[in-house]
Length: 402
Ligand SMILES: *Cc1c(COP(=O)(O)O)cnc(C)c1O
Image (cartoon, rainbow, N blue to C red; front, top):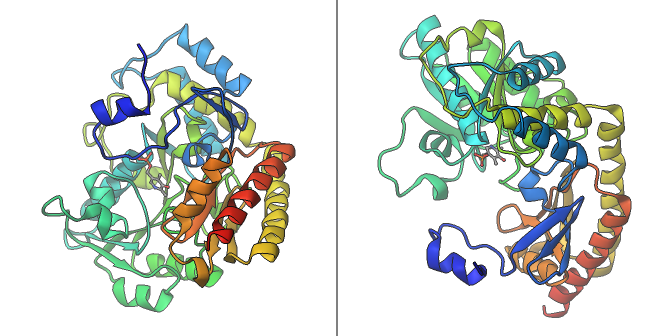
């Protein structure tokens, strides 16, 4: 059967507007489309393909598990899930893991757990959830309500209640909002979708201290920042602030759908048998791939390499900006970087994305004013240089049309 981008408009629900070309194959940080055209991938499937496309170790993990056991449901446990849980809890503050299939589901579990914990340990008035403007936590109705962009949550009828927001990096506003009725605070320790915004050290420490003061759980949504993205296995490790619950997905499966919620024994106890669940969560195929991805990412070679690659990106992006004067700031950490456009190009991130695509470079935007890069953590330096040469041509094209 012959399918093309036109088929999308024919048979797919129109909630996405994908690029004109249809990719058919990937290897490392390169991708090829139906016509055989080659692209460099700085998008990484939106911070997912942590080891690039078709990493041989991930392919073999999938193939080995694929000929052993695919699915059981949670009526039975399975070896890959148990090993992955052991490795994740060994590597982090957490004692317990819950597996889901996506970031939104991991967050949904975290929010439900926080509400249960407060209800059982304190009282039913302790139900307020605080989150931050521009934050993103997924697209289920609870997570989209907790997320800080009403554009994503409006228009679907009544929302889950007792959810409040304030500005990220505004500790004074946060202090006004939190009280003994706060059950949890959900935040990204580096805002991704909202524009690649790092937390200030005093802010994140202050949030932790106020959560402690008011017995509120601190939930770090590390769906985008986790699994080596910032050069630490999890971003919290670089901030010196430990959450009570951490959610992880995207890079966790290296391209195979999986999410996880990690927490302590004391908190985990409140999700007793029957309180929450998932048919696929902890699926052996997903867990086998994630286990292998974690084994590879959680090594000094890969984690230290992230810092070196970030420096290379920043150096070349700085040179591009000297020539063309388009960015006000290059921000983010590790392999999660954002080029914020200056006032001359305000709101035109998409124009740069389109120009980059014309130069056979895949990148992302974060909001309307930031061009985002989230490539593989092991993208070869040669691909970074070639990709940024293409990006420079894209920048030149947008600047000359100005
Ligand atoms: C992508 C993302 C999510 C949602 O993950 P899905 O797998 O799309 O459900 C949640 N939180 C953050 C911070 C994300 O970047």
